[in-house]
Length: 584
Image (cartoon, rainbow, N blue to C red; front, side, top):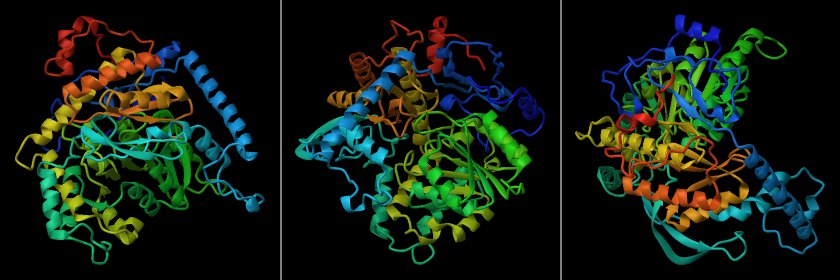
């Protein structure tokens, strides 16, 4: 396990720049594993040697910056599994070249886009390897993606049944519907993707007043009072001076980063950042350097080098250094080490761009994302970005920060100037759901959903680990990647789960490293205990059939079938004889 910071850096953080904590006028609670600042921590002793399987526990070494235990698990891939995975891809590649040979000689029909014979001598329009992967590997398991849904994508959903008669090149609908499929793949963290309740009613009412579309940009005739109300509410929710909203979450990153950085600027980007952040950084024209995922040693080294050496060739100081990180990394389930990132950006006078697409609403005792989760001051984050597509059950994204920043973006952002305004029913969905989370609707529904999501996450992650699966990420992350590894098991797992009426998302190359294919579960507050138990039973059954229980960690046996009130803390007290004390 690489250390989070060097010993020298740790001493600097303790004695020098630190992160400011704030309660935002609210008392801390026990939701989502949040504990008070009087929690004690222990520094991890440096290990001279360890087994590969012990790479799994990533514990924050800078304990003084954290007000709660921070442990993430990334268990090492078993050597035999890694070898068999490479062999599987090798066999598929050999057969792929054989089938390409048969296609070139007309023995097999090719359905994908290819270069025309008349343009063979030109620069290729299609990348050869990407096309090779699509037609020979992806097409074998294409039936696991793009399944048509004919209901609200809530805790349960209905799927349109389809079949393929040409090995997944094309699909035909049978006219049948697969009903009551437990949805373990949608980003419906707080359960607001629903067609009943106060959110649906408010959105329907706004449709009768404003209609569906605005047919203009915010700068022309598309700035409605409901948009301004939404932005003021977002700013209040985030604890920042001002905020602005955009109609598309992807464009919030890709179109606003170029407005914040340009030639002569340096962008330091986490290696696992989302494609929207990567695209925005490339479009900006800035110099981009990538640091290791959540590795503060790597980030600090790049910051030092940037300040010492400056720009290439001229060695002039960088005009601006911008650090790009995410709150929750959607493929790893890991949480950014925000206290350490803030301390580093303060020491080296850099700017911080935080993408909270998956963390806003899903983390923190009040649903305020990673800033709320760690109990930090929102003013320490220069640019707070997030989306409304996950926890709020809506669409679009936002950027929050100082008023000067937002005023600048309103006149310089391509998304703000040229994009059509957000649909009014969508804006109303955001307003209503956000007020519920904040408790401004006069009920405890928001707090109940936050607590339910935390308990569901703890329960689901622990049960998978006890079954013997390798799962990645932070214990508090509702994104739960479960490792599949082998290419043949990607499609098999998705199909077998659907046979058991469980809808899952399977992910492989190029979205993940080639030997780290996985199933990604998204836990929701809308999931009931029975739903999770049904899903866990199916996962365990399929895991036995496909031999997916790779973990070499000790598995608990004879576990109680019911965990009572779902509280992980109470479960530890009841089963304290089998639980080791937390180290931090």
